[in-house]
Length: 327
Image (cartoon, rainbow, N blue to C red; front, side, top):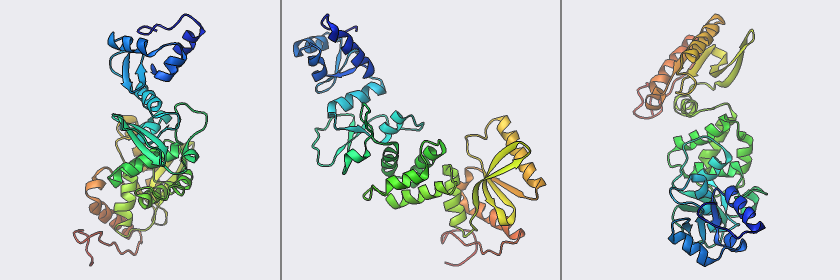
């Protein structure tokens, strides 16, 4: 490969294949095993034919390092007992999301002493081997462990909820599996909040906006419990209602940015509302105003429910809530 000349024997081809599999990264030990000594490595570095990433870890090219090369280099630098975790593992698992790519997140066994290296963030796990997938290189913690670890590091509760709910909506892991994994992490930061978020996902909540409605509108203001993601059919058409107060024939649809922006989606939403009206149901539709003004939404929904026989009462969520009621 350009920038690194191997001995002319069978090892050369194997080393080329190894570096290709590792996105260009390789360790000193791997180079020595393939007939490349320290003098040759130093000479290639001086000539800018290869570059040193960490102590004892190199890339067989110069210039900017792609994310995948940085991942391999970090794993090679920390030894075979490390495993990708957190945001790094989630991206490696193929989840879409807004990940922290500035640092490579690695897990190591509890008690393992590690030298600090720039660009690598270390997490220590008790029962480390129980969380790691077998037969993978680089080693990788299970998706559920990575997801819970990454969520626990989000400071804002909304960001924790968004991360967990997005993974469940992408059908990468079911809520019951997350709950089982959470039970094995008794010391995880924010564990109680994560448990509630996962339970809400099991009840049908699929997005941050739906979770905001559940926690800051419905629960906070004493509204009755609704069914979620209710399957509705008309002929061959099938759709799912975000929130359905079945006893009062009231539907609440929550329109986030995804899935409602284009003309075809808007027409679909209008048709769905028309079908519900023909079935004797009322539909109220809300967007991201729920985040900044949940009390107004609760007041409107409470009024609609009252018109359909709900006895109430609607309760204020805080001393500053505009909904009448005492604290």
